[in-house]
Image 1 (cartoon, helix red, strand yellow):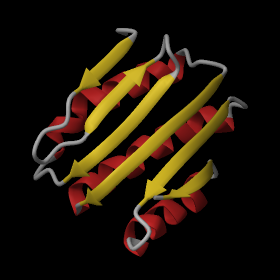
Image 2 (cartoon, rainbow, N blue to C red):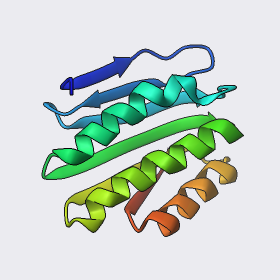
Image 3 (spheres, rainbow, N blue to C red):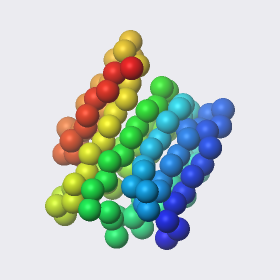
Image 4 (tube, one colour):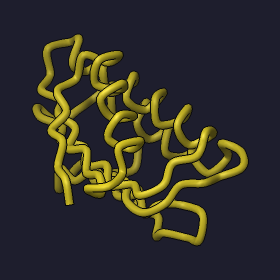
Length: 124
């Protein structure tokens, strides 16, 4: 597994920072992809990371738009991280949302309940 996977934001895709060495894990921007191809290398990286994780994982999600396809992949990502949580590793998700965007906040709340991971909700 490469130590890091960094993808700059595109028009329809979020910025992705998965950096094990610096303990930095972040998705930010907009995600309105039409199929899940964009997320394949990201999911592969996370699957490898789960095999040899850092003692603590803090994942930052700061998405201002999530379409249905992205939402499904994000749920898979969170559930993969929940495996770490279930194994006793510390996992936390910092879920940022715009003050007026109750849909994004609600999505995070639903993922937190489904995964059992502690989410910190950060309004901006």
